[in-house]
Image (cartoon, rainbow, N blue to C red):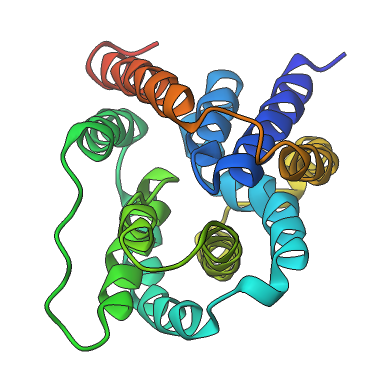
Length: 239
C-alpha cells in the first residue's frame, strides 16, 4: 500500500467533512496531511486538485443558496492574484515557503478579524489578496472571515464559499501547470482525494446541525497553530 495515497485520501475525507459541517476549516487539515507525506513544492499545487471533489459537491448541494454576485467579484480579483502568486511560488525555495506559510497561518488564526474594506466592491480586492496567498501557500484565509461578517446565512455561506474557492482553484491549477507542475504524476493521490471528498461532503452535510461549533473552533485553533509551528521548524531547520 502507498501510505501517501492513503493519508491524502483520509485527510481529504476529514477536510471535506469539516467543510460541509462548518463551512470552512478543512483546507488546513488537507494541507497538513498532504504536506506530511509529500514535498511542499507538490502539496501546495495539489491542494486545488485534492479539494475539487469536495467543492463540486458543496456547490451542487448548496446551489440555490449561492450569492453569485460575490463569486463574480471574487473571481475578477483572482485573475490578477493567481498570476502573481504562482510566479512567486515558482521563484521561492521550499524552505522559505515553509517558513512564510507557518507565519501566515499563525497570523490568520490568532489575529483578530480583519476590518471591512472601505471600497465599493471589496470582494474584488479580497480576491486579489486571498488568491495571491492561496497560490503561494495553499491557503488564503482572507475570504472566510470577511464572509462571516456579511449577512449571509449558514447555507448561503457554505455554498458561496465553495463556489468562490472552486473558481479560484481552477485558476490556480492553470497557473501551476504553466510553470511546469505535472498533476498526472500524482493521479492516484488525486483519485483517492476525489472519492473521499464526495463521501466526506455528504457525511458532513448530514451532521451539520448536530456538532458543537464552539468546541470545534477551540480545537481547530490549537491544531492549526501546531501545523504552523511545524512549518516554521521545517523552514528554519529543515526536515
